[in-house]
Length: 199
Image 1: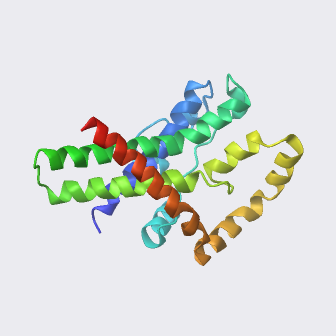
Image 2: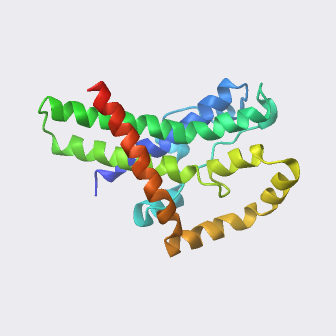
């Protein structure tokens, strides 16, 4: 159980830091002013969200505050900032898989390191896919809202307050896992293929 802590902290922290870093790159000073432009886990953690994640595999970090009106490229910036979190999780999963592959190739044996890397890989795959779902307040919903026509986006935004309850219900019924599990397997296959080429 203790190995889950560093894996969870790394996955959550990198995800939120990526949002903050891309927003800052696009000209928004809000994350820096909120002291979120850091890899310090304490700045990004929501205590309740972390406990929920620990107990039920469903939780959240503290959302990074942004001001889209500060972005140099307008609404496209929302897509870039939103996708940055899941993209960072994919990269971290790739790094974890590469590290595990290198350890296996050179017969490096460390149970603790292997467990942390495996959990880091698993959590990042899970976070990447889950956060791309089109349910507010997940990252995928922000991308969808930008891509929708104005009238549809307005209706989508009106549904946002009810979306978390719908999401929890679908998780409880097993619908979300039925959707995300095949996508996680597909992403894993891609990462394993990349690792196979590199090693």
